[in-house]
Length: 125
Image 1 (cartoon, one colour):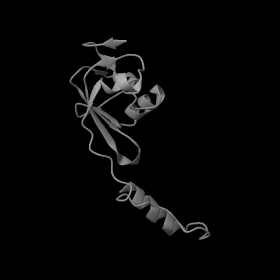
Image 2: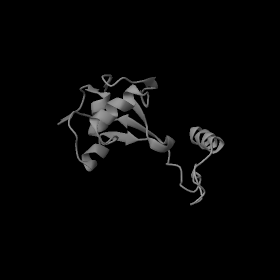
Image 3: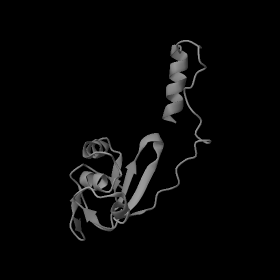
Image 4: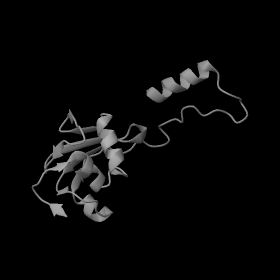
């Protein structure tokens, strides 16, 4: 189950070490450009080996930065998965700092086109 010096597909690896919930989501993240290996945009079939740096952009603009320690082909439990990588991720942004964008008062009615554009502008930044 654990291979020390072999190469493994990046989508399979990030799913195996529980950085994504499903392999399909891992492959979709690669195709969307949310996964980088050693600074380069990764396709799902790109291989990773021990020592590679993998960056996975997750929801809310949070980015996980991990260094591959071991390669695994099959999904493993949480404890063995944590031993397969070294987590260099910055701390997640606090919920107090991230202001909720797009919350409207209850009963305020539908947002106008101007309101919708402001909400979209806030979510992009």
